[in-house]
Length: 292
Image 1 (tube, rainbow, N blue to C red):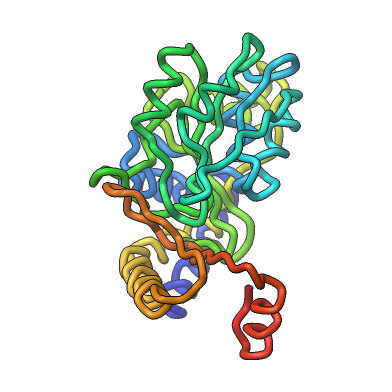
Image 2: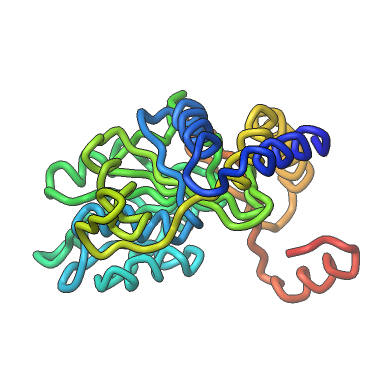
């Protein structure tokens, strides 16, 4: 792996192209194919991926966006960043994911979008959310920051809904050597707008069509991610095997283990357990060198 990363870095340095060049284009193409989407747009981070997807869909002040009450704060921050209002939806206590029925109950006339999170690596009920969004006339953005390689009923998840946002923070299943993110979608109009928004709203060298931001995946991170991508499936397989060992070993304990719904394949970014003695268990694991 070190040799492949060194080779990729050297290639970028020798090219003299460091922003929005051939490496970004190559990774965007590879990532779209890997996660089952027609298009991928590289951006600066997972948070920016969410912000740009919402902005490109026209979500803004006066709009409500349904979000899980249990998620990383970036999900909520993205909604606030576009001027919209995050509305929390309680997750299913079994899966820790929000379900379409719970989201449906939270819809009002102000609701403009739903932002489900494939939390800890397990995909939500994608089909159910797509049906709900279509019937209600809502935008649907999936947060897949923790779900690289997850599947729903055998299908890859990157081309579903209006868009899917990804993070390549170093600790993710596919991590850059710095901050990086991407948006995947099957909508060519959305692709065009996100590409413009990530680059100051620029249409051409001297023309700026709207208020954008600086959120470009750089050539170095794109090259490094592309070098790591062929190994992602093997890494995910290893995660799955380790997760299964946890489930098998702890199955008879008093702990509440992750519940994986039929037809869903988790990327196992995290194995999250629940205990009536949470703090004591966390302290014991810390003494044993296990991070929680």
